[in-house]
Structure formats: structure tokens, C-alpha cells
View 1 (cartoon, rainbow, N blue to C red):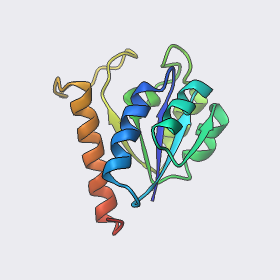
View 2: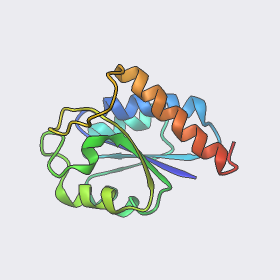
View 3: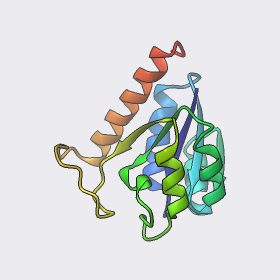
View 4: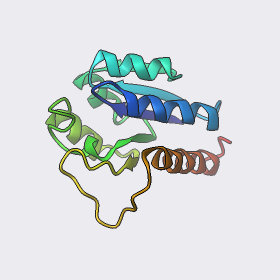
Length: 141
């Protein structure tokens, strides 16, 4: 199973997700860090990603090569992350057949009604739990 963790700016969210995923699904999946910039990718690789790619082409190409895509809800929105997430990136993620497990951060003008006000660490824990359930259901755990 291949999991893409997509992040931009400093890669802090992606880093936190990868740190927890690495502990919870060790050996069940390959984690691919996809950063909008080299700093984000480097941060996620330091956190334990197996592979990494940077920039628009890396995200566009890999969106259809993975089973699960994780990140913030902003990765579905063109020009999010202060403009780092291009329309091509958003289209590739949204159009991918991969399961998308997203954290509802409201920093990009998207507000998801019905979500609870869980803390960011709590949301990351929920995301990791869901990814682990999928890996286990696919006989990888």
C-alpha cells in the first residue's frame, strides 16, 4: 500500500502526520512525502517518509500512483497554502482514484460544516487511526 502525505509551506502538518503514521503502520505501507516546496518535503522526509518528491509535477504524477492521499482539506483547493497549491495540483488530488483522508483545517477559506472542534493533534490521531484501519482491512496489518 502506498500513502502520499501532501503538504506545503514548512511541512509541519505533514511532518506530524508522518511521525505518527510511521509508528502506527510501520511495515504496512510506503509513505511518500509530496511537498509543494523543498522545505516541506525535507521536513517530511526527516519525519520518516520512505520517499519524497517536490513541486507540481511530483504531486500531479504521484496522485494516481498511490492508494491513499492525506493532508489538509486545502489540497483540494486551487491556490491554497498562500498560493503554493496550484490548480493543477488540486485537480490531480481531487481527480485521483486514491482514498483521500483529509484534516478539516479552515485556513484556506474552506469551512466544513458538521466537523467538530477537535484540536490539531486530535485530528492527526483520527487521521492516523483511519489510515491504519484501511491498511488492516487490506491485509497489510
